[in-house]
Image (cartoon, rainbow, N blue to C red; front, side, top):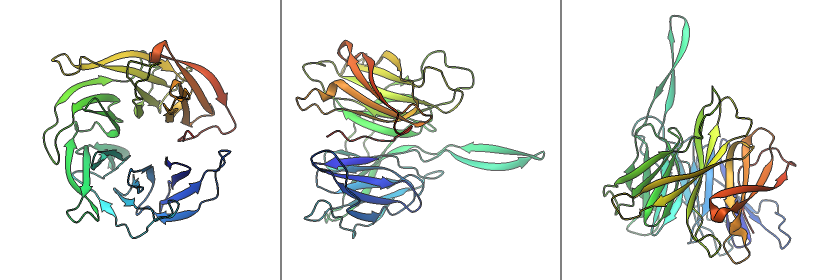
Length: 336
């Protein structure tokens, strides 16, 4: 995945070993060759994001670690002196999947399992799933202000698999990959205050085909604008089993009755995308050009290409307006 800083962009090499690269974006939107490359500190980084400080956070899915790498006076050049941040392996392996800057903290959802163990039983190979202690790590700068360290965590339901997160209305929204659920919690004080689980909702579409196997992927909560005065939450399903001919669905939720005893999540719609396992989704910027009215989506499997949807009914629905088949699968987008 990638993050952008003005006309610079950063992206990961999701391999073993992983790396972080910087690129220049010219006035026509074309991308340069890599300007700088540094190690991610581990294997298979799934996400990189530019922070308000100019640093770039990159975390490695398969090795349970990552780096927060400053840039130099040239924002295209990395300061490779940054150390490696490792996460406690509470049970099973650590699998950090993204980073979210919130105030002075960096929040890292970590699946921490499940891990597969193979055993032979009556001459048959059996796979046993060992669930981990899923959590969201809280990173903060050390007292010296020079390095980041784990200062606490926000535990998640065991076996849920927190994959991606967002913060809105002073609430933490977590998309759980393994349970295909969306949860809303209070955002507790650092480092380890207790988070109250307010509501959890399934994101799976109704009446899936027999043999469907779901795993949640992306969460987006675009800000309100004059054209979209109600805030909605958009989350994507990934069906890794028997496919629905309509493709995988984006579930649209509304966060309702905030601050009351009936606060919760209301399912508004399921929109079928025609895409197999949508893993890349991005709304256009709300900068006066109308980009927030469009959602670009692509899958990690199949050959549906990239699709652009227009938000309709003030955000309650999505309408397909464009398709590009030049590349069958993509994983991320940066709006310029």
